Length: 235
Image 1 (tube, rainbow, N blue to C red):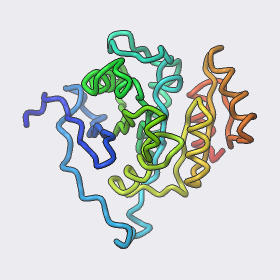
Image 2 (image 1 turned 120 degrees about the vertical axis):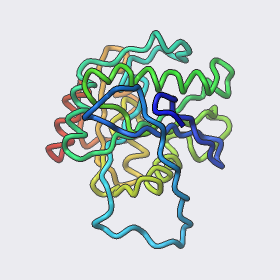
Image 3 (image 1 turned 135 degrees about the vertical axis):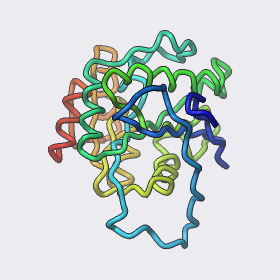
Image 4 (image 1 turned 120 degrees about the horizontal axis):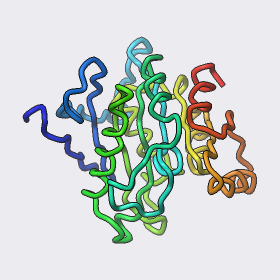
């Protein structure tokens, strides 16, 4: 595959998709180099990687966290980054974190947009991050509606566990940042450091949602970059 070819989403047994990206901070001559071959996901009885080989990750939600939530966004050209996201992700990478986006995209199953639309939006998101010499290392998304009751839709942890197997991630040293209770619920179930962000007025209902569900995030911040700084400081 030529270096200028866009990476392709990989199908998973759950029906979710993952868009894998190789990070290249030194030279950003193309949007995204071709993806590395996908390693086999280990079975439940396979030995875990040695502690020294585990990596820490910053799991991030997409809509309402990295970019304003435009509700069933289809047109990639409408995508914008939330304030401070580019510099914050660059800083996370500099501190040795993988950046992994886990997002619910029920609009696919509902027929509001296609899988290809989702992949174009993810490519656009990384394009907007180019001036900051950073990018999202991998995108994992669930295309199902809540009624499907799948294991990959947050607050289910299926996609997080998939990422752990694929990237040798250590949950004990990793964190999740999101604007909804389902991000915090998934993070708590996995033992992640949890950060809730409310970057704009429309996020206020999500704080009430946390209270209603009896959830308390380890970090509460009004901006994504502030949440990242506190994650890097350990909470």
